[in-house]
Amino acid sequence: MVRGMNTIKPKKLEKGDIVGIISPASSPDDLSLIEKGAAYIEKCGYRVMIGKNTDKYKGYLAGSDKERADDLMYMFDNREVKAIFCTRGGYGTPRLLDKIDYNVIKKNPKIFVGYSDITALQMAILKKTGLITFSGPMVVSDFSRDIDPYAEETFWRIITSNKKYGKINLPEGKKLTGITKGSASGKIIGGNLALITSVAGTGYLPVFKDSVLFLEEICEPPYRVDRMLNQLRLMNVFEEVKGIILGAFTECNEVNPEKRTLTLGEVIHDYLAGLKIPVIYNFPNGHIKSKITIPYGIDITINASRSTAEYMESAVI
Image (tube, rainbow, N blue to C red; front, side, top):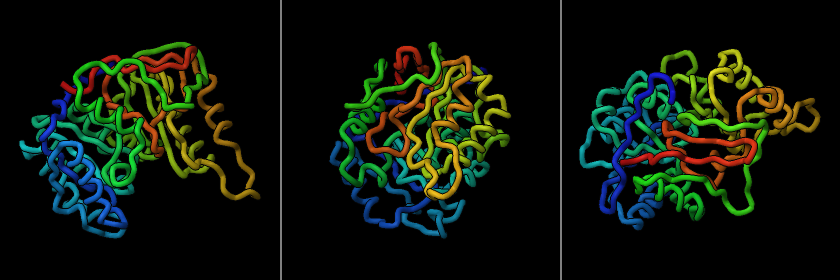
């Protein structure tokens, strides 16, 4: 168990429940995709409430910080809303962390789903309230298109069932890779590597001690991944956690063929291969279509020797 973390599980989603849709980071370039994603959710048997500021633009942000924070707080404060789905990631959620009433969130625990830039909100909510949140499909990024069957099945199963998920079966043709050996159990925390490092030292990250750390990334060349992993090393994160899970590092390669570079694999090896804790790679989560939802804050067991992972408890009640 992560030291000092008393987790709260939201209630499971049931048919007919209202799902709130918000844009705490960026808006989609094509606003019609919000309606397409909402239509998919309704087709699955739920009602939808779209936040009043989801169609706003302020540069790369979905409206002002206040507008985005207001939508988030409205959805948590509204007793009729049983789950909150983000439209997409992008940029800007760290700007909201000191503009949120965490007491309202703690008093109104509900399912909150997103990934990528949403990592900052998820870790802050876990730190300040203990509420389990979900790194899973988003309204525009996933639901507005043909959703991957594996992502679809695992997502709805995890947020609608109060039974333990158990061993994680991978998408067809995929397998986990053990970078080191051994097994470990702990609360899974983490998310997008850039977002984790961007809020380090701010008081909005949960304590890493005795956790299992999950990391994923997109479009960061090896030298930037190197820089961020080194920051975690200097913070002694790798000494505190019980294990590490690496998800998809999508397009994290040097695009300039004339530039001298380490490969992504070499960078990861430099930082993680010598650790005396289990480290697994190729976990199906991140900026990929075929992903399993991660409930941040639940117990997970990983075995790097056998290349397995298992959710040890349910994420909802």
